[in-house]
Length: 175
Length: 344
Image (tube, rainbow over all chains, first blue to last red; front, side):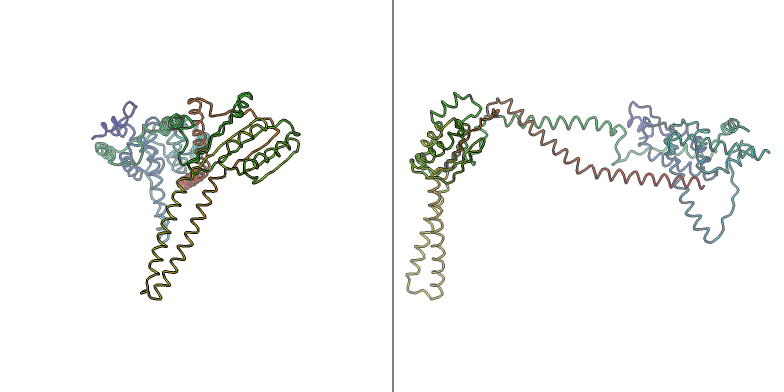
């Protein structure tokens, strides 16, 4: 049974797209989200691959009435990224016991001015995440808040603080 | 640079997935989505709300339907519902009936006659209302005289002539005269209630007789064995012990038989004399099958509601604990995620 037939059979009548169509439509969104969340393009690529593998395994759980495929894929991506961040933190702690960590040169988004790119990288992952969801992916406030597990007000506050910090940092560099 | 400029620049420079990654994901999405052979997760079409929408009315229909079926199945005539093993209870008098009818019934002496050819325990209970406190004492004395005149005796007597006087008397009256006694007691005033209970003792009596016969035969056999001269001392002692045990058993059985016969010979009549006005009680036995069916169904529904409430009381704390644990774990997880993201 291929993806389309399974999707059609398991959700007759609902506006459900096939996994292939969802992957094609939202690959850039998931990659962009993970890139902003991790701040590292190599890690983002790996995590994007892992996210879609997970999503393929869990595709039957996706319910289009509860949210768009983009939101659902972002939820899977977030869960994958958090797992990765936890394991990375454990690994770093182990390694730091023997040798100090090496500062790695990170590659981020091409097309951004060097000041803005540097400012974005200065933000915390939580701030970059909300910018990715609300600005880059253009998710509505309710979906973004649900994905982050916070209230809409908290989501708006976090976004405005992150943008203000970005603005301040870029202005400081320009001066 | 303003916030608007920042967001515009960020939007314009939206990252695109590299080509190798795109190819990898395209290849991945061509893989078949496996349908699990066994899945413990519910299909998306079965939401909790939908399940509740079906389950709640189904439970209500089951509960009410079950109660109605039970009510209809048990709505036969009251006599049909009597259990044969139970004593036969004959409510021979209707307290809620009009006074004229009650008086005419009393005068007719409606007490069920005892069987003359069987051993039966006969128990009658009646309440007679007398007109005023001044009639209570003479009526009580007259009831005692009636009992003695019919060969019976007073087992207990209680007399209370307070604001609303009453006296409670228990008589033992020979079964042959019990019907007469009931008729005479009923003439002491107006019968407010009357109840007769008959328990058949014949089978019990026959069984005792059979047992006595068997024990007698056993004693005779032991006596025969004891008459033999060839018995050793040990055997003789053993047989004599057995005979003593059988004799004791025979005595006990005879006592039981005598008690049964005595119980069957004397009827117990409880007489209550009162000056209170009878309450206008609604007699359920006079309702039709539909009324009885509804009454039974109502009783079952009350029981079902009680069980539901009991289950709720027992399960609610457990559900609350599970919910609280779930919320705490989820909250801790979110806090940990937030800290992790803020520190990254």
